[in-house]
Image (tube, rainbow over all chains, first blue to last red):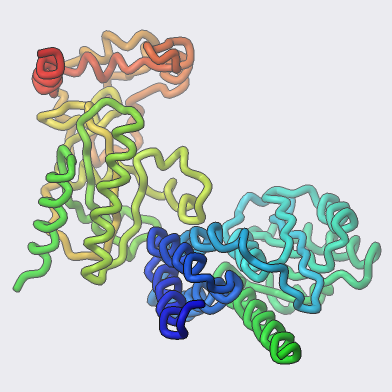
Length: 229
Length: 224
């Protein structure tokens, strides 16, 4: 088993790789983590996700802009690709399954993809319907997969109206389903009025929300672990 | 110590040694989309070989070298790969359509846009494959080329089998002049098979007198 120092060095490497959008370093760090026998979950959350949290902070501080965020996300995925097959299924006490997509008529999916990635990282099973998704598909896919979270994205005022229909239909079919909406024309007010359970304004806010979600998952995981120990 | 000159020199020297044919630096900030405008300097990398997998791999390697130097010096960068229209599986690939390699190449003085719509370099003609690295590092920009140097030459216009080349002269100040009828060009390309049995044409490259001397020398070298 790796020493604490070695462990910390590998986490640091993964974190730096994400912050400095260095895909090669992310791959190297991930491989080192596996070679040293570290837990893949640990490496993802204490290394890669830790780095992405810092990236979120840099974005808020307007140090980083859209290209940096996207390159950091690519670096994170590079590490994730290597680590993910070694992840032991997490028992978080929550059902990790989510349906996500950009609504009909809308082809903007950068924000949606970043949110998707964070769900991916958090160990959710993600059913990505892509972009320009016919409204009925959200409902049928939710029924098929029995996911209890549905995420809708829209970038245009003309397409966001479709969200309301999806929310109504989903709530009618299955009142327990949780719905998150996002995209630049959406507001907290709209989300409340339409009965959505969560809201993210744009890619940066979605990232922040997703990060908060991951952080709370982390807390759940730690609590679960301390209970066992 | 002037770090601006230093980083130019380091990058240029390393890339040329690693197989780049030409390197140019350009200030492109004022042409860029808001999302990437903070990376206002461009390193344009040209490799003078036939377009094949080896060229793409070499350009990728050169970009990695440049970005490593930039990162180690504390600068930001964004690599636009040579085949940016084909790369779609990464997050950052969404941004590639915001930038054209030819913009960096003409702005850095590597060449102009020929009647055939391709970048023409005085020494190598249209026989360069391009990649770009955008950065916020202070590079010493080259002198932009703003007008076509094709002059009266119309070889590519005459030899184009589909008549797709309009024969107009490019100028930076006339960005909407139509040089190529792309529908005709792609229809022709679909129907012409190269030696590799892939859709191919490229007569407008072969016929261009700029850079033919270098090409001939290379062929002779390869044969001898």
